Amino acid sequence: MTLSVIAGPMTAVKLSGRLDAAGAESIALRFTAGVVAAARPAVVDLAEVGFVASMGLRLFISSARALGQKGHRLALFGAVGMVQEVLVDAAIDQILPITETLEQAIAAVRA
Image (tube, rainbow, N blue to C red; front, side):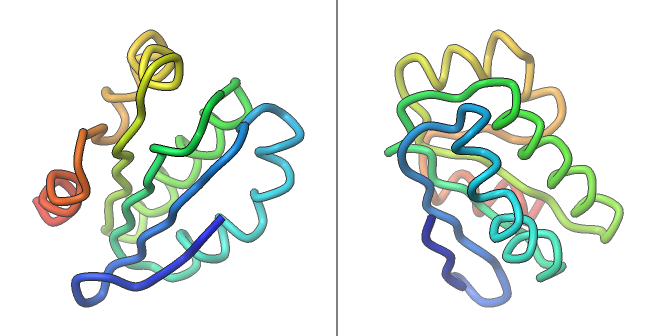
């Protein structure tokens, strides 16, 4: 997992690998500390994530809700293949923005 600050006061996260139970658990603390505790809009790059299970979805949903309570948004972008299908099938887009590009994600969290 890579964390960086982009476009002013915004957190960008780049994830890779599998977000199954073990993968989500291994990044949960760092992800939450880097995204939620920062208390600013955040975008998450999923282009290098090959699999997302329920624990990965839970991490995104809980982080989006926690950021929402602080007046900020979380957006996901770059998901492809099975990861995109899982996000759509689970209707995650009803909870947080899912976009194709970084630019669209930045626009979504600024809206």
